[in-house]
Image 1 (spheres, one colour):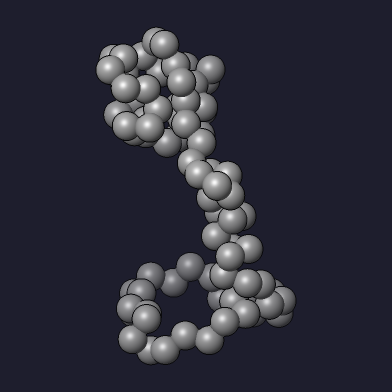
Image 2 (cartoon, rainbow, N blue to C red):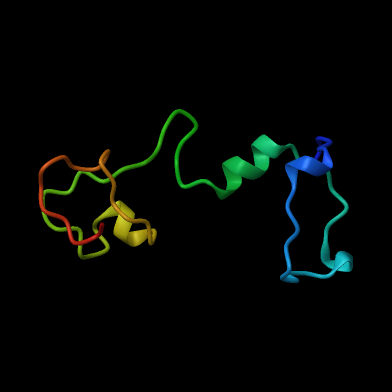
Length: 81
């Protein structure tokens, strides 16, 4: 990541995910990394507007393995919460 961080901004991770040799030698901004990992758009979160119970892949949230939230549908029943 292209930015410097202090020691107090990190916590120790006991798990080993990848080897140091597998890390690419490319600098990327934190914003670029966050955008690439995000399901949302730049100005907000994606949401479903299903009229049914969000139990199939027609639902954006269900399709992306994300639980529906209060931004999706207000008082409609939902099985994906």
